[in-house]
Image (cartoon, rainbow, N blue to C red):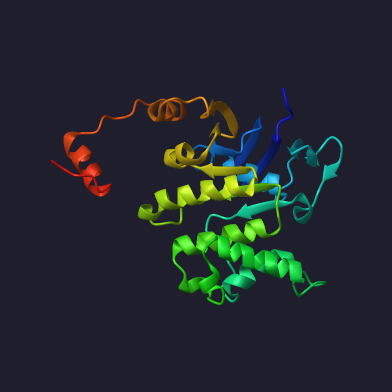
Length: 266
């Protein structure tokens, strides 16, 4: 068996007032797009923060493509900047005072290097072009639609040429009518960039549209894995994730679905 591209084992405890939450989760896979699926408060976000180096686990390890980013026993704990991880935050965390181009380029500069090199400038221009953002390069985030803001945030995450993308509820901030379109765009971006991605979500549709493998979280634990590459039917995958049989569409809903998709209705 080949070495897993993503190998994560985490154990940590966090307290908030009188409440204490214990996370003890482990997963390993060679899949290109991985989903961590489960209800809010099940430990998905803590896992992402620990992988990114924003939160230090009490024990465990994080290994990506053979690189050890964190190993409590070996005393390895790379700082976030050295981990080569791109992070797409749920609400995108764009800088409102910076232009689209400056947002995309932000991770390439530092207090030591305030200006982009010629190569970095060309890289930013290439990302703006590939994400359809060239015409709005000088615009501020507040003037953009939700979908455009997501593209800016994704371009920024890819600008540092990461070895892994972390996607925190990537469609939660979007109008439901945009989600299907942008799921397809995100899938295409991940494939063309060749960068593995870990996405957290509580929406089954995100999992079914994007993920190759899904790890289901409950109360701080991974309780099962679903390999969607082996799923031969969408409803079987839905049932495996939720444990529920899909509800049959009524004639009225079938008719409405055809109308919404532009199909002829008898």
